[in-house]
Length: 489
Image 1 (cartoon, one colour):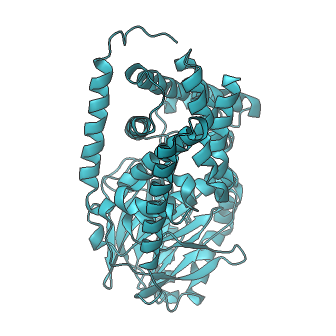
Image 2 (cartoon, rainbow, N blue to C red):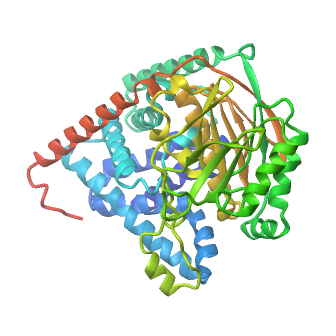
Image 3 (cartoon, rainbow, N blue to C red):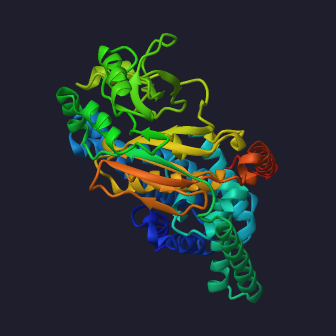
């Protein structure tokens, strides 16, 4: 029965990944887990591993699709390989629960457990940065009042509060402590009140600008067919008819399927832009660079005169998607010839005509620490994405969009997303959003510029120092526990 409850807990935490409107399931998701560990404290490591394995599998099963595209292996072999990976990653959950119950031997204390979970999330984020999947905070993107807390403590505060309130709710249900009930209600009302207050501070009377997004709905095979037919360029040039009033035209990630920096079609495109456009274009390409050996995942800012004004190279690449640690081995055992990209070295802020903006290329939107440290110099965010590698996975599309919502609230800057086979649209600084329909490839979006800076973006370095200190404290507490080297699974 204990194992079944742990599986139920892991699945409840994953429901919003597929159905974002059911975000409240996460608030209930820890209750079966707390019940198990409060009443059946044996085999803690194994139970923690089981919970983690199911949780990660349900959250990241969409990785089947890119592996299938890359390797062309039998689907059952791919599933088996991923299950082995998830089983390995699940060990960190077993270690977490073993460590927690080595320090705190009494029944679960919601506050201490939430702090420990925060440390666990921070360690995961830092040590397993190549796997930015299966975190709780993005599941709350539809809960507009709750996510306003992100402008204070970002991704981290949302994670802590979720687990803390879940722990209080568990004690209300199973221990029927009146003080926990009143504390839960009080904190919830304070959060809701703060959220409503912050939402009312954003209105439609502030300065607005118009941006044009180009969105596509092409599979990976169709993208390469587009290269043969030249329609990747046609998509871009046709946007000239829709963007006369816009400040920037934005394409999806790798919208050009040739090397824009080196291929002759790149110079031809610049000439066409000068002839057709009256506004700037931000286009994306996997492109070479004179200072790098391999290609980079790049975003270029092009003037209406067809000149390259600036370039941003993606700084955090996806393992086994953009960079392959075992590239030679993979090329030996599969028919696909893997080729790693190189990572850029710095965040670039594009500026022109009195506007400045930060670009997050595809999966970079999943990382809370990639927001620019001087956000007061930034007017808005752009996310260019190509999610066709995941074969129209609803879980992946929800994860990417929900993360974009969090980045907008954390920074208090509007975000515009242009994607291929993705949810595209705009997110205002309040976290309220508008997704674009797929009935057109071109959309003019009015975004409201925000002059309010968030505590989170202004003092992120201090928040991170606090997280390091908290992590150090828990490690010291663990080392001081007698018999921690007696590891009973």
